[in-house]
Length: 152
Image (cartoon, rainbow, N blue to C red; front, side, top):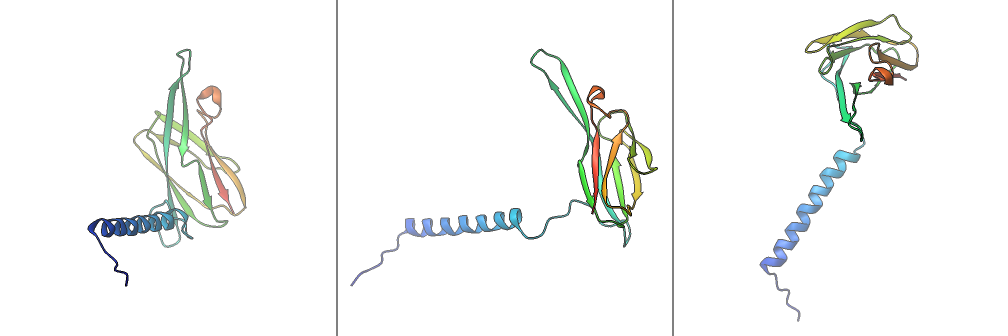
């Protein structure tokens, strides 16, 4: 007859394994779950989704001591459905102001530091539309400050 001896150490190891398995399960389902987590606020109305952007700036120094910087929109890529009305709420964090236009449209505006600019949009054609800051449109002007609106 065999006797199974259960010690406090074995109980601790058993519960440690259970806890590790539970943590792995919850991390795995949150990282690789079947549904994406939306990164936007509640709809502005029943039919309008709100997407938040901010202006950002990166600064660094080269090996020879030269300071370099680049501005960007964050997030840099937005996905919307063809025909879907949505609202961009763009908050100015870095830089005094960022005049912009959306390529392929008549949409123009300015985002100012500490202020929010609201743009209501709807694209009827699929494609990639670029949100371009005209002050920082290329690397020579601390850019390119371009966000991509992908319409599927």
